[in-house]
Every structure is written in structure tokens, then in C-alpha cells.
Image (cartoon, rainbow, N blue to C red; front, top):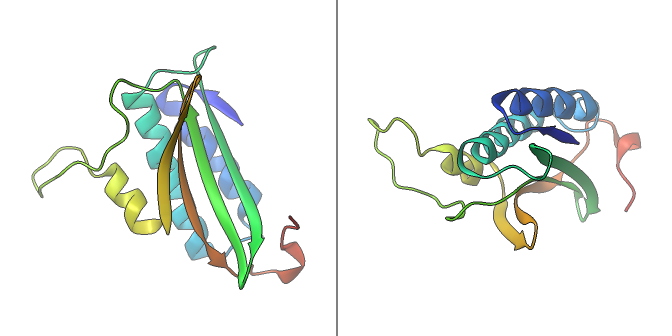
Length: 138
């Protein structure tokens, strides 16, 4: 999906993710996915340029793996001079915790760059679906 390069983009992405995956993943995982997606879109809006058209691209993918399925979130923006980095923060810091939240909730995360910008991704899994009939085929 494409969302505005604006704070409302994170809200739109969170709601759509929650609506689409509510019956597919366990509620605790859905809460983690929503929190991580909000951080990734928020970081794209605060720290990176938009894609052409003033937007950020948001995607998620479920993939069968041994023991269940994995979920990958991906947020693509126009990039920035300095890429996403875990920054040190203290209890008194005003910001700088977003990627620590991502790293703490996701099993893996990373950054990929191409000629159009950068994608920050986070992966969760394997997880069991609350409804086995909804496992996504690969």
C-alpha cells in the first residue's frame, strides 16, 4: 500500500495491517506487528525523503516456513543521507528508541538500498496461525 509521507501515513498503515491480519496471526503478534510498522513508517516520515508523489510504500508478506509462517514488514522511502541506525538513548532521551523497539520485537531487521531509495524491513516468525486454514501458500 502507499501512504502519505506524513504522520497520518502511520495511522493508515496500522489500521490496514490490523484489519488484514486480525484473523491470520495471534493477537499478541498482531500487536507487535502494528507497533513495529508504526515505528518504521514514523521513522520514514521523520528521517527520510518521500518517494515520488510524496508517499511511502508499505508492504507485508506472510510466507510458509518450517513450524508455521513468517511475517515480513517492509517500509520503502526515498532515503536519507544517513541510513537507519540504532542510536544510544538514556532514560531522559526524548527520542532515539524506535529502532530499539523494532530490534526488540522483531526476530530480524535490516535495510536495503537501491537507486530509488531505501527499504527497512522487519521479520517475525515462524508463528502459528490462530486459524490453520489461513496459512498462506508460497
